[in-house]
Image (cartoon, rainbow, N blue to C red; front, side, top):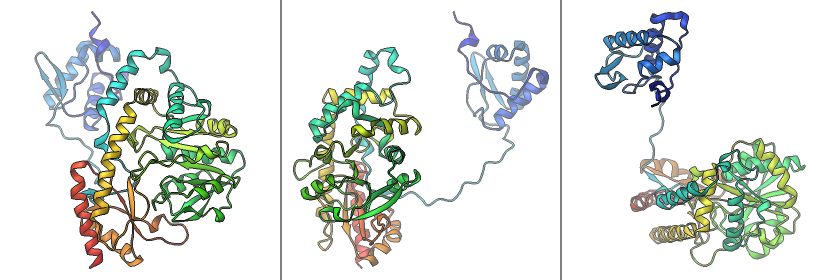
Length: 453
């Protein structure tokens, strides 16, 4: 039978043998006062703590007895000793909490999926299969590009579902699109590219991340056919051709072709390419120019943002620079998560899950579009997790205060603009749970009515 001390708890105490029994009691007392030993938590047994500290067990027994008498510990025959839940109060006062605005009740922020749709049972089944069949060596430090199993699986899946020409050797696994922007900003710097263009308007966060790598950020206007390619002069550009974010338009075929002929390095953010509702999804831009286009995809919208699972399909010339940038950018996603996603895709479970999500999100978008007042016509195609409702400049200026009164979290367009200001609401219909979406929609309609009055 294993010694009792070998299976006990590890603890840290500010104590050395020279401080003696009184010093040990003071160290334990201080750990409790500081909150490092939490009320109600089990403390190490006397035998285990004595072994770890190299003192006699009787010394620890006396310390525990004294602290129990003072109200710091609770002892009971046949039960482990615990930190008292009442009695001695900590010496340090809790820091005053900073005042924050209350969280909004209704969440209509764009680009966020319904967390309740995460397929827990499917994810669990895939995880179990991976753990049962994966060799021990797989759980080492992993490959610089990411799991070879996931890369091979993505190669087939992206070719089948998005028309991407994806050699596994040209795929790199990253921690979502935000991570990808940092990696690409640094990689492009290393090959002499120091300016990146973004669609105007576009989400600020990704522009800001690219800017932190030293890239100069410029905007190129978007109209009903997507980015105005004739105004692009930068050597690199980030686009959302399948469903422009936030305006919701699709880049026209002639502009897609023209873009691939500009000579610029193109980053194709296919952030919700799986969610097209009115007809078959538009194929990826990458297939038109695999040596000019970096295809970026993630599982953030189809599964969950917290997984931090993303991938880049790279031109051959950028594989090594991106791997070098990846090595200095932080950890990749968990290997177990990579293998679990690969299992979901290879078994068809991922496709079935995406189809279920597509049906749910299409229903929500249809409900939202039908409920809008007649004078508010949403812009863009039926796709993705958001739609844009144009507003006047005066109406948009009132949105933050009015939305706060109705406890609605919703974004506006003008803060996303770099040049000429656009005005409107960016309504995300994915963030609320299915049961809460009706209430969120009613609250949004109340906001719109007040803006009209």
